[in-house]
Image (tube, rainbow, N blue to C red):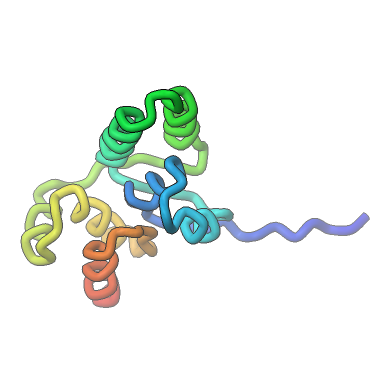
Length: 137
């Protein structure tokens, strides 16, 4: 019997921009899907609220697809490969100030730095801040 090759599961911190692209099929979703194909994902709890907000806004524009977008949201948030965690706000705020990121975005960056994991994002400002901050680990 032939042995199946299994890709090792990597772990990435993933931000809302990346998962919103997947849920809503926004530009860049293919890149995100490829990077996360064999990955465990970890994100701060703020991810849930950012995804809900993005889906709500899309439903406002395309109410006939409400069920589809809601199902994709539920599917994303119930993936067994996605783990939501708390962040230390006392450390996130100074990081937000030094990187000029929002508290939301700084939460993803802090988590990636704290865990020593790569960050998957489509957000240009967050990606630039991660290039500097994560290279200092």
